[in-house]
Length: 214
Image: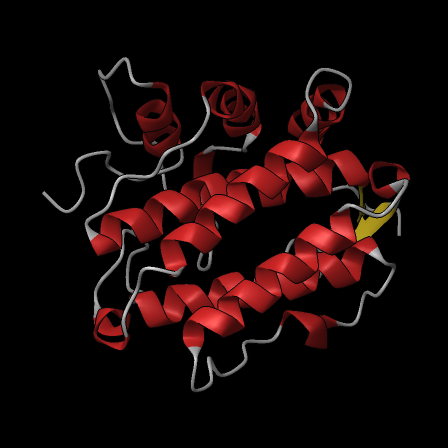
């Protein structure tokens, strides 16, 4: 796999972050924060709209679970697209989410993960990403998705200041332009913002309004 996506500058930026922040630890913190938020939902919450346009909380959770299993498989050299398929939430959505989240935390904690190559079926069919790039993708996703779940439930997400500062350059490295308008794009076009809150800046940079749902 050698064909590089047309985002090489951004990808190289993510590689440089490996030496300046502890991607594995910050990713685990973000995922654990998402677990704590999901633990608070009820079955009645699953039909609520989320900041992810067109998705209810049910749809967002199934996406998050699929992502956890997909990234975990990729970290172990498994490139089968079936690992990324959506699966039923089951009788206990909270337990289903916790199992998936703990699975990816465990997978990323294996020695040498950042030195591996990842085949990410949902990102590119013919390019292998570095471990730093892949974990960065997952990390920023779960900063944003934790915020998504919190907003949906009417809660406030709490991250350590160090984690938010680490997430900021990752958000800056996410490609912009027309790629944000493509069907199924991970993030929408940047939203204008004037806030000094770092997390709100990240959220706006990645296409969500910090004032959602207003």
